[in-house]
Length: 173
Length: 362
Ligand code: SF4
Image (tube, rainbow over all chains, first blue to last red; front, side, top):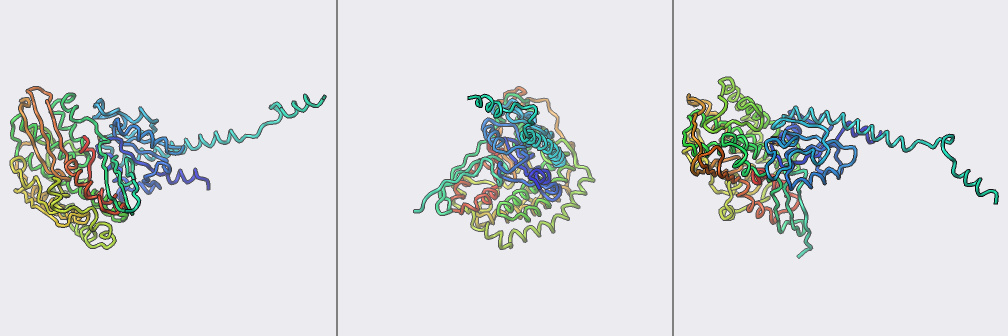
């Protein structure tokens, strides 16, 4: 089986708090707990950006956590999906225009799924992550297509055969 | 003297919910020096409360300082604002505030315990504790309308009444919770594997705790009897509803676990007492006054003493608002308690401090 098949069945989640109030973070923790049990989708919380497929961000981006957020995002391998949890990750929410907040994750990294609510309920978070799964699948397909395009053999009829041309030029001497 | 290594922990780490950064200097796996770097989540809430928001809106904003103890924040702010506009809130509102604060304490303590268990490498106990915690989230939703961010206390009273049906459900669920709490107590107390990780980990002596001004469960586990519920009687009548001071000796992670569990019994008793003796009165005291003068309020949040200071100048917008969160008082002691421990148990020790950085950094 290929890696992509496993990725669809068992995406790994990376969670980062970019300055939120912890409210959405404990709801993510509640998702891992037996009642909501996000592990039935094969998801597991990892601490390592290099192994993760889905980035769950909470909180308005503060000036100090901005660089960390971009750093973590760029360390994740393609394909990757970003889900922002809670209204303050989507747009800044109540913290919008406070002097140390940048407001909204999508100003710094591309966001695929927005989960709103303050705080976002576990059901909503699960909904958002399942949505992220289908996006992950689409992104994987798009990547595989480009790989296939690269591996296409050169069609003899349409391409100029440089070696023959060169041989024809060299031959007379 | 062996070779010294510097090991960073954070800002993003699997065992941390929030961004915080520790730099440990280790020698033969032992931590000899710690540097803490906490203010990643500073948002500037105090400044915004004094410029952008009117004083009645601020109680909703300060709830967003911290999602774990949002009721403590909004209640403390409401108390300060009530002192500034000089009103006395109805008795029923006081009781309802205490009810939600205690329910919040149950969920916060259980979250902390589960986090300690997870970071000690005890995944099954994490799951168990989180499973038992879920009932109080449901009850909080029934009482306040939201699982977190209750927006329950406003200036002058509370927003929602306790319906008799909900009160009945709370009593019923608490009865189910009691044997579960006993079970947790048994595991945290007697499990040999867990105590290997937690006993003598992150210990602090009573004298040190006194010197470093520790508050909350951290101090009570070291034998210091500090609890705001024991001191201020004017704003919320804690003694009336059966508050009792609990202390442990030992001051290590194990003592903190046991202390938190024992406090849950008290919380449960307080909730039952409140529901049985809920006085009849309106929910809100109306007033048209503007805040004037200075005031302070203190309240016992799940992590310790929360302090609010506010100053008004007869306009809609406050002149100054100052928030001092419990974790801020504990940082010095946290750094001290980490020294001398194995590096491997550092995540569990940090979890047992129950730090709340979004409170600290505001
Ligand atoms: S959306 Fe609300 S609950 Fe979630 S982190 Fe932001 S302020 Fe906290």
